[in-house]
Length: 230
Image: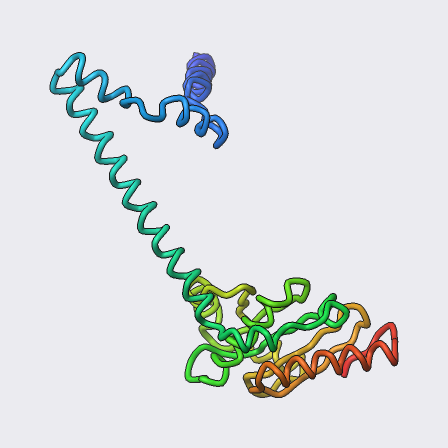
């Protein structure tokens, strides 16, 4: 008897799940949006044709939700526009021009800045230098590794608010030491084509970094090897 009741309850629960409305895809919602664009919502039509307290309340609730959604989208749109503007203003035109590297040197070249966010103005300056490098050389891999106890929170916060064109990852001192790094900021070049790495002490300006990248690739092209770390 109990087994029958249990099966009956499970069947009813399954039927309820099947009766739940399935979430519409974005394309379906877009189609519905354009079909009703410029037309009053159903709740408004009901309230106008049958102005009962329930229908009027339903219309009011839908209007509030719509206004809240519009306000949220407007706020996010404004914030994103400001981030784009800050990104454009963050790197001077002269620095962008100096950061351009021929693709023969940029392809399969990975540039990693090891730094921290707290009490390190030199690190911030190098971040701006890397931003110019990333903007002007899309075929180059650029990233930043943050070292410190709060590196995860710093990386999330820094990447979310800085408008950078490259990823920022949390790291630690042990990982830095394994790469031969004992201070920050430091640049590590990984030539993925020739399987070599090279450490450059920072800070340095964009012209010096550009020269270092090209010299490193030139050396590797003259002395190819399957593996090697410097």
